[in-house]
Picture 1: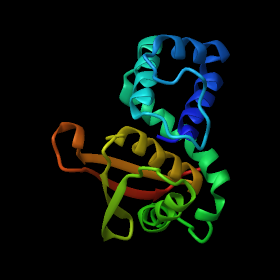
Picture 2: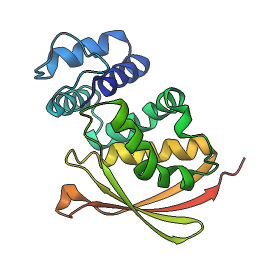
Picture 3: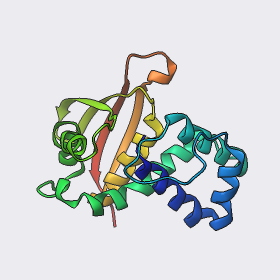
Length: 184
């Protein structure tokens, strides 16, 4: 996993829990990396999972909840850094469809060696989308948080049903999404 993700996790932890909390997590987690994370460098996935596990132990919150919160936290920064990927999309649904077809294709060019999830889509109705998520990392809770944040970005509510999950033996995760305008 690219160091960019670890740097974002550090930012979330220090923003939400304070500067000392990150040091505590690094001390508690059985990491292969002890010298800090560099954005463009690839690190073992196990290090991310170890940090999330340590954060769960420290906060008493389930790992799935923390990963979803992390996805929601990281999206605004990704949207700023990669603003060009949002250009031309006007709805959450448009953007989510572009992730597998455009965004990840371009991210793979920018970050050699990045292992990105794969997405397929079913488009059953104008206000609905079925997103099929395949990833060896099985970070579906992180993906759910990103979806939440996409709704925030576009000012829409996205109801999610995680109908199938690879962590529970399915071939892939199936997110059934319903979009609606956010009430002010």
